[in-house]
Image 1: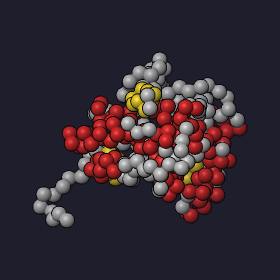
Image 2: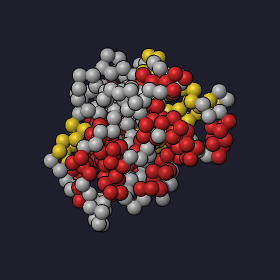
Image 3: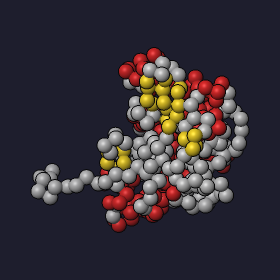
Length: 316
């Protein structure tokens, strides 16, 4: 996506004009989420090119380029999957939600133990695909822990942990120590995952606990299954209305495709990416009106009530 905007992570990045071009003149602006001065969920209209100015840059932290191509070590993400199995439920709008209010002490302990195990992992000695799975799962588990520790909240943007004068949300705060380095969510996404892998599907792998974000998957990312999982995540998001909503007058896209358009190769790259992952029906709709009419994003918490269990129902 582009080089600098009010981002889905809520932080101010390096200001640059790389995202301003012909797109800026003809695209309808999405709601501009304020940082600090405006409450979470409020928005004011702003041209899309202004939003695109402040998205965090992919700024490589060279220290994390180290890896071992010959490593056969596989990280155990089963505890994360056990946690998700009890907490994730499909919402009525088709979004995968997490029942934060129903997570009990045992599952919280499971999550803490999983994060502690990841923190003790020498990630620099892993193969590349295994590293990607490590970082993506770490990001998502940390985000869930942050929300659980401060629940109930209407939006993750209501959670302020510091990290800068103009920041809102938890993304700039140092939350975990890996190999002696204190890391924030922004570090993991914008200084490790995006610049090292240079793969736009990174944006489908990390979940910001918001309805507008790609789903938190019920299965952990793994090195062995990485390609299939990323492609599935891309298809799921592109073919849901919060990713792409096509109409006769053009498409309304998730703001992700505006904030980080550079990661997809600019506007032309975004359209090619959408066609690649769209269902046949959506691809036909895109081809009929290949115009980006606007952007949208829902910062509401991806909360969901846990399904009620009938005590009289048979159990397998």
